[in-house]
Length: 559
View 1 (cartoon, rainbow, N blue to C red):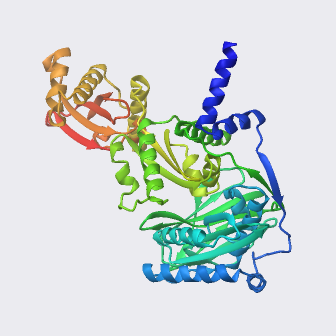
View 2: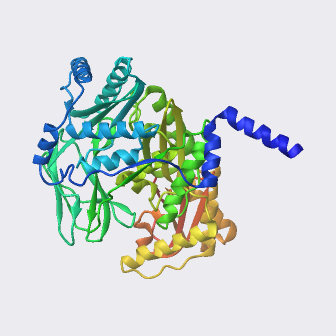
View 3: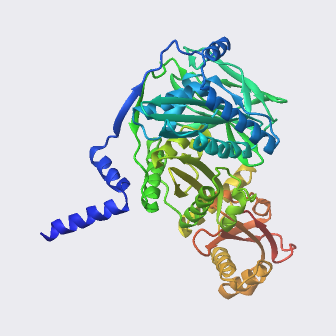
C-alpha cells in the first residue's frame, strides 16, 4: 500500500510540474516520437539548383493573400523608415516554404521543426540559413494584428544582426473556422550564383558569389564521415569562390561564416549530395516540449553533446561549473532581451564574458542556438559545420551549457574550453625532459644529462613560486641557497635559472638557454597552485664556463 501511495505522489508531482516530464519518461520507454504526417515534395515542383529561370516560373505561379500582403508591406515600410534601411524583399521560395509549414501545422504539428525547414530550404535551392519563423493559429474572425505585431518585432531583431538585406515570405491557410498564418524572415549576407546540389561521380563543384557587405568570410564543411573542418576560400574583393574537391560518396554540408560587428553569423548553409539520391520524403513528428526544470534540459544537452563526440571517436567532455555559469548567465540574458548573437546589445563579447578564465583556459568556443526543444537545438548546431567543429574539437577538455525557456522557445548556449588539468608531477616532468632534449636534437646538439641535485633545487624554486615565498626576481638566490644546503659550496659552480609559466607542458616555449654549448647538466622542477592554474616551470643549469656570471635568470611567461 505504501508503495502505491509513493507512486501516486510522484505522478501527481510530475503532473503539477508539467506534462513535459511525463512525456519525457514515456518517450524514454517507447523510444519513439508521435508521428504527425509526412511530406513528399514533387520532384518536378522546383529545381532551382542550376537554372535561374525556375525561380521566375515559381514567382509567376505565386498567389498571396491580398489583405495580409498589404499589411506586411505597410509594416516593412514602417520598420525600414524607422531603422533607415532598405525595404525587405518578398522571396517566392520563402512563401512556398511558409505555405508548407502552415500545412504541417494544420496536420497537427505544434511547432515547425528546424530539420523540416532545412529540408524545405534545400528542396527550393535556398542556401541561406534557417530564417526567423513566426506562426499563429487563430479564429478566422480575428484580424491579423497579432501576427503583424510579432512580425515587426522579429523584423527589427533580424535587422539588428547587421544584415545588408532581408528577405521575407508568408502564407495564410484557412481550415474550417481556423486561420493559420506563417511568416519567415531571412537575413541575407551574400548573393550566390545557382549551383547543383546533386553531384554525380567525380564531377567538380565550384560555389561562387558576392559578399553584400565585404564581410570577412570563412568556409566550413562537414564530410560524409561526420567530421567538420575549414576549407580554403578564394577572395577577390567582394567576390568569393570555394571548390568541393572531396570525392567521397555521400552527403556534404557546406557553410559560410561571416564576421560582423555583432560577432560571427552564418551566411550560407547548403547540403550537397555526391553520387547519392537526395531524400524524397520528410517524416513529421511531434516534438517533446522542454522540461520546466532547467537541470533536466541541461542534462539532456550534455548527453547529446557527448553522444555525438563518442560517435566520431572523441572523448566525452566533463562539465565545468565555471563554463556552465558563463553559459547560463548569457542564455538568460538572450532570453530576457530576445536576441541571439555572440555580442550582447550592451556590446559585451565572448572575450568579456570569459575574463574569469584568464590564465586558466584557452581555445574557447561558444555555440548559440534557439529552438523549441533541446534536441532541436543540438540538431541545429550539428547541422552547421562551424558549430559542429566546436562540439567535436579534439583539444577541448570541458564544456558548460546554459538553457533558458521563454514562452515556446529555448535559448541555448554552449561554451567549450581547453582547461588546464591538474598537474601530474612524474608524467609531466618526464615530458618536460623529453621536450628539452627534442629541442636540442633539432638543433644538432647532443643529449644533455640531468642532475638530481639541480632537479631538487628547481622543484624547490617552483614550489616557492606557487606559495609566494619566492618572487621571480629572487629565483637565483633561492636556487643557489638550495644547492648549497645539499652540496658543498665549492662544488656548486656556476648555475643559470630559467623560469616560465605555461598552460600545458606541451606548450613549453623553445629557449636558447638549454641550447648553449657551455651547459653541462640541468634539472627541471614543476609546480602548480590550485587546479586549472598555469604551471610554473623552473630549469636550473650548471655551466662549464666559470667565467659566466653566476645566477643568471631568464623569465618567460606563456599563457
